[in-house]
Length: 135
Image (cartoon, rainbow, N blue to C red; front, side, top):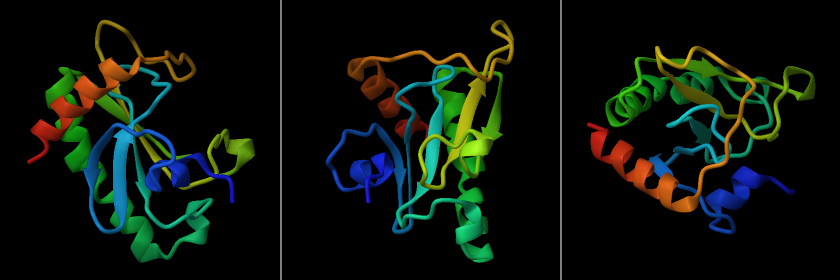
């Protein structure tokens, strides 16, 4: 299987991790829509949420408030959006279940399609701030 997220989990690719437990990880999106854009993924590979048990779906979504709160604290964002796509027609780019947490800023508006490329130093510093805000 060729999965970017599985490669990150296996240490074959770099990831700027924010949170880890036995079943899930959260890390910064390498091509963020805005500063602090992060993902939550299950450690076990599932392409879509329909491949998961209801309990596993609930478990991954239950992490969103905790991680989103830390992102808001670390970035100073005013709000956040959650996104979760299933299948190519829904614009799921990586076929591994993931939830997007996208910080939103009053002075920037809400854009869904703009992506920017951050460098590793910026991502490392931001990940450190968010990890320290997790309580």
